[in-house]
Image (cartoon, rainbow, N blue to C red; front, side):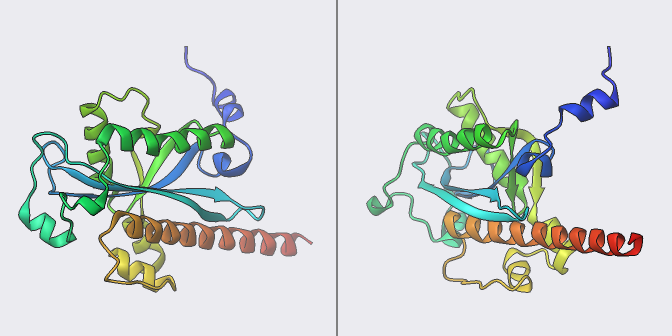
Length: 224
């Protein structure tokens, strides 16, 4: 029996970040890999930045969790991809961690944040995020991790949002158009790209929030 629209509306969160995104918790993620095939190519780096909402209803960047990942057994390492990222997967100073360990370490604070905010599911925020989500889902399947905090296919894409807000779809150009600084030498590391993407996402969402408040203020003035 179908539930009424009124019943569904009553069940939705009414305050905080959960209300802003219909029960979803946006978590910004970036991965660096040894190729484009999520089924065969190694996951080499992963970073996730948590976002919170301040008292004014604006998003702010909080903790970032970043790990270098040990290539899974039998993983393909494409030479051109490694040259592009500058990653040497076997450099002992990388302090690589196994995939299952990294995923559990990344997921634990996300689950804690879900509980603290009343959100029902995390939603991955990324720049062209299907790429990142596919690699994460493949790693989850390889390691038989049962509790995935992320929605399996829904994402927020800063390439699309950047095109809407600033007319730029490349991460570096969208970031700079928003007033952010960009360091090409630091790019293509999961931690840097994640934190830059997180800041860009916050700026876009907060810009929209500011316009909403301005519109509400103008409407109130007209009524008064």
